[in-house]
Length: 76
Image 1 (cartoon, rainbow, N blue to C red):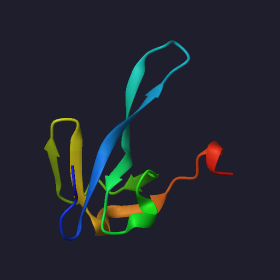
Image 2: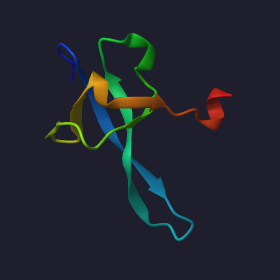
Image 3: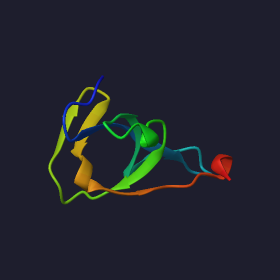
């Protein structure tokens, strides 16, 4: 899926608990596509107060909803 205009395409992030349960990580997503190519493939924290749209396994947020890039241990 490709982003158009000021939208960012994200894939929902899940976390695995010690018990083995998988939970939705809330307002964290993996960037699939964006006009800002530097954030593609990165996990971002986004505001849930902004408009969101879903399509299958993907959801779209406006670029202004992205608040931070989350540094993963692999990035260090």
